Image (cartoon, rainbow, N blue to C red; front, side, top):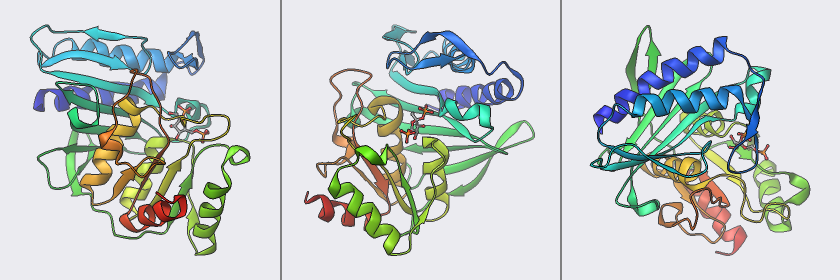
Length: 282
Ligand code: FDP
């Protein structure tokens, strides 16, 4: 898998350059979830596709920005599912955005996920990698032209931050009273609207809860299983936290029916996830 990680590092540098220098306007297209694509979404997707074409172990790629599966190498071993520029609606206001990669072997579901990578494009460019073999995810930072290893990522059992996604107007009563109870207990609100920086912040500040529930308007949530949810579930579990859906099931046991399927999802330190389970009665 090392060749995939090296390719992602090169893509990250190219995408960072594109964010800093390219047109931020809309492309005249929509992605598979019906969202308008930015020129930067399309460009980031192409950067990754082009680079992955020279990585022989990649069998096929599945992008949030593409409708279907694109085969790259018949004899490849891995399927790489990725969101090339997550949170791209924040680019025009100059907030952090990210790329997310899930590396799957012999299937497209939680059980087949063998490694996850995400990149945060902020004032600095950082990248985290988790594999099934690693004890903890590793954090890298782009320094000059190279990604340097900075730290292992480890969550405390209980944190202080709460990042509550979704439109509050459509939250269930159970969800609303649970989130209210966290704030009543002293949790601090930290939500930028970018999944990557919001989850990254909780990971690096020791813990808390990121939630994107099922709502009246989006009963299956908004975040996509293969490109967003499962990769972060592996990172959170490897960091010593937990990641579940609204039935209390580990996200890593999920099997999407369709490559663009979404799911309600909750990522956090163990204590917050246990509290959420008891509030939801699951
Ligand atoms: P975006 O639509 O800007 O791409 O992936 C979708 C996402 O951003 C996540 O990055 C983010 O966590 C979420 O949507 C934010 O959604 P809400 O505004 O509904 O909370």
